[in-house]
Image (cartoon, rainbow, N blue to C red):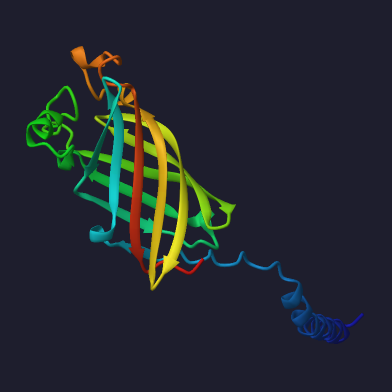
Length: 210
């Protein structure tokens, strides 16, 4: 084979390969593995309406129910009812704002035996999972931190919407001694019961519809 013939065959082979690549390119583009879809946008953060919200608690002292509530707290709620698993809820509560309706008793609550506000002024809740139960009801699992003690809690939540406001309500129980609330002589549960019922109502604006 002459050098001229070899060159001609090489050029022909390259042309064939080029043509094949050009013809195959569209098909290759079509069969290219799809890239993962972009992650769904995080739900918008709803805004708390403090004047319409409340966090309350009830315990028994010498068998008699005693009601109190916190006057100052904040909530960060990023939640879409149609995609609860992507939601996040965090609460911060100023323990020094606890009141039982009596100034002398309230002054005791801030002391080290109870909330120890001077050392640890804030309690927090941070959700770790949220799931739908149906009918506007949900269940939030998360970490509750009081006086440096962290416990897992499961919080049932019911949502209702009216006039652009979403109201989240629910109640759950804790053991005060799990969080060192009531130390020293106050550990005696015959004086102050260990069980504490926590109730909340959070009014929020900016949440997606149910």
